[in-house]
Length: 242
Image 1 (cartoon, rainbow, N blue to C red):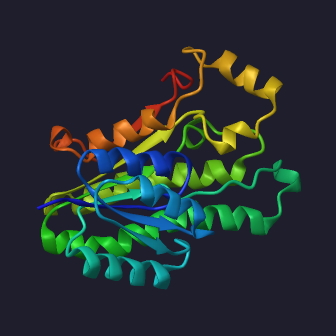
Image 2: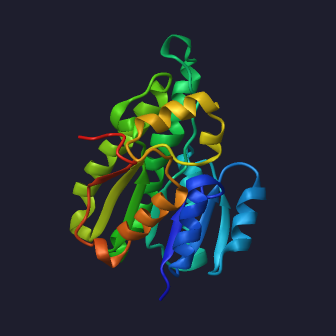
């Protein structure tokens, strides 16, 4: 029986590459997206395994619960949950709009909680499941102008550790990945001089690629990682050391 993976925020960037990588590994893919269907549909055309599109704002628990019920009905089972959906609304703390703080936390951290909560009953009945939460190196070290993003991504690490302890007895694993600076649309928006400074601070002297993260996800949900849970894998070219 083919395994099924739900990937949130799968239409672009890291999420898109995770979908492509798991598709190549033989997974059927449930593609979650929030905005326009254009990018999600484009991704679907590149997948070789069966897949379906699900539009849902992960910060809305009722919508998430409905989406997961529909995915379970469509595929018959769900084996892997990858929480990748996330946004940024950067600003220095003194200038940060409280709504911008709340919206980032609600989507990044709240969305991760919502999908895990809605998915856990299914995983518990199956007595199997793998969860990978995409955090960030910013959640480990903080960053100027990203108090909201850092708080949300640090929260994901704490959530991962607690969830892993709660559900391990049912053969459900929960891990996190903390990417460093990765080549995506988000990094493309960084001005060249700032990007040069970032690369100078990375021991490997380059930005990561989405595939660096996707390959780690594939490993963590595979049979090669059945004794790994509650961990945060930092993939940042050596930026955070210790």
